[in-house]
Length: 368
Image (tube, rainbow, N blue to C red):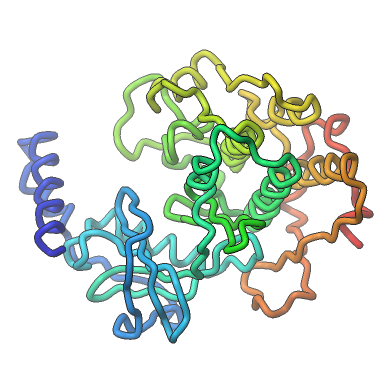
């Protein structure tokens, strides 16, 4: 493992050298700078010797995820690469710290629970372990068969409730896609995971082209070459666009823009306003999709509205009484199931519905 990490690290140095040979020494020193001081609450830090790492279950662009054990309980262990903290680049240290801090504040039944983190001698975080696999792998396993419509809408509502919770608390996920959605062991519930690109929403410009091209909102993609880290103005509605592509996959179990590479897909969505086909999608849901993937972010509904619309759709097909989900405010204990999130009045005033005639409100259903 150490040899592999060393080669990976050398590859990054070589890439930087080719990128700008004149500033080679300065760039390499910046990448390998080890003076970063972590600012993570001590209550979140755990002794790495208490964590057992077992089999590899997932691999990301800068991390490996293992099934493990902590205090005799099964957990997921996300280890940042390279294995030694001193070899991790500054950008990834900042990203890791932001992920830990943000996820530690999230207490919701549809958000993967953070258990703790370690910064030395390796950087890793541990979360609850979900054995139902990712939504992406599950859809692949049953393709070309579609999900049962009721199950598809149930999954969509799980995602909506989690995203509504995040947005109400000023957090943008920025990488909503099937591989970041985990199924519970019985495969009846979805939890949102991987907050590596999540951040608090601010009024100023934020890093553009954050996320994965196939699910990326048009406003995040630039048709012109951009410098790494360049910023643009956008808001939480980028998550609504990503959700629309996920919802389309739940309904069709097809790959969006199959046969095209990711860059081509992003360009087609941004420059040509192309979207996946709505053939064989129920009319009511096709209308919702068109609203959610609107080119103009201001015309996309809030997740609060989407939740109400899908709830109404469920009631129209299956009139049985539906129990509203338990939603807890950031900072509340998971055990306090009696608490329901109080939305920020100031934030909600800024998020006016752009299509009140389209999304019908069912306050009585959600407030029982």
